Image 1 (cartoon, helix red, strand yellow):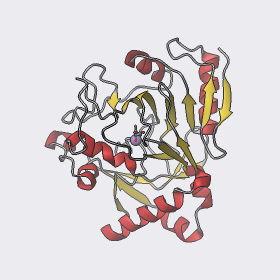
Image 2 (image 1 turned 90 degrees about the vertical axis):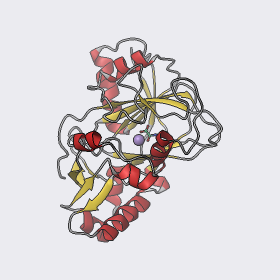
Image 3 (image 1 turned 135 degrees about the horizontal axis):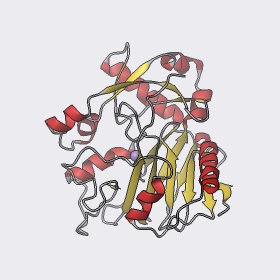
Image 4 (image 1 turned 180 degrees about the vertical axis):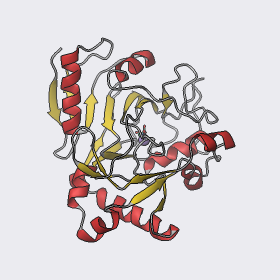
Length: 290
Ligand code: OGA
Ligand code: MN
């Protein structure tokens, strides 16, 4: 297979043609995809009519798929345990309402974040398959955090340089009203501290590393000041010149780098079905300060 890469935005995001996820990739094609990913941070693979098993098999070209640790809200698929359900329809095909626990927790993804940053070795990247897409919203927005770091005004840069932020999975219930993690889930996923400026293990470049839905503390700041700084940084990051907004077509698969991007989805009409399946590539190393 040979691939064609077409940028979708000057900051990040590129469409990749010439991949059929139902087939295994050869080593040269895999490397071409990795190179495009390193350069564009978010890859769009249109027209991938794949099963969950094929989704997982494609993910394995890039690392080990994560098994979501929380089982209480049925966000992890019962059928294929590597699949995380970013959907408002359950596995019995029932449309859920926004005030059901899983939907409350998922609503956190409307705020800027990067997946699984609450792990000691956070995720490398995620692959999201749009099975039933929204036409009333549900646009997934991505930010290039290398460019954000490079563009930070001096006053903000001084506040993140050499500093660490805490990431806690338990934040989700505090900000969304979803049920708190069970004691076992809490014990399995204690809060972790990561540098706010990180060096990417492949590109060697520095980026701002924040995750507003999980950050509950910053070294040397009280709670209010921590919240304010994460908000200020997120507001600065969310500028059009740093952002690719993905308007979904059915069977797009997006593959993004969780180490140097953040993402957030726009709201949509809850009466409209939206079915998206995600795999998450487990982290291969701790976050290294930049
Ligand atoms: C995710 C997420 C994006 C979306 O899948 O990690 O944050 O478009 N959701 O729902
Ligand atoms: Mn996410």
